Length: 267
Image 1: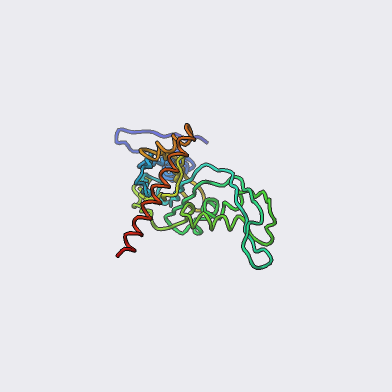
Image 2: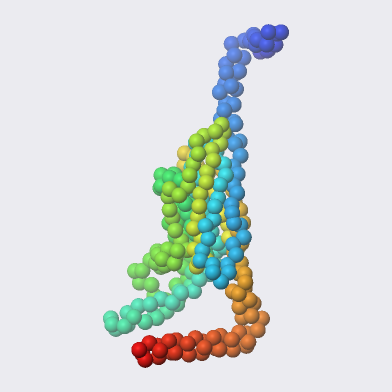
């Protein structure tokens, strides 16, 4: 059995075998899925250089791009993992709260902000792997104190959430309609003032049917500028002068506060 395709002057295709006809139809059916599978994913973000001056009070990072059609997107703003040392508090004699020991934790991200276009628990295995709760399996605890029945990692997550450094939100991402093989997305992530200078990543993950179908990562740098940068440089390069300056500022501030209260008391 053979299969051949003859192109005539009228641009009509003549199939000389039933099996060839079926093969041709299968190829036509596969073309859309091949196009969607190879659909590119793009992302841009601004600002990628966060300047932390004297008036820095956090910043809004805007991210936008394209993802494969029919997919959702998860955004994560993360910092490099670090080793964290904490003091554990507990009641002594059932009365006084005191430091009862030290706890060391490894592989703790400096910051982890997660946003999703749909509730993350509806995005299958891919969503589960990217949610905040997944950190419980990656953070390692070196217990230097008796933790008893306390879930140290859970308490750490709560502490970071209270500081605004860990968060998981939904609905702040706008998804456009499918346009061919892709769709647009746009989102804003509120970077808190508590973030430290350093290198960070903004990551966009496209998810469809519980699987990752695209991923893009951009670098973001936060650095001190102006007066805070000068103070930081002074502290590292001339500790003695920094200490003297800090003492003078504290004394002057104390005198100023005292004068204010004295003037109010005179009235």
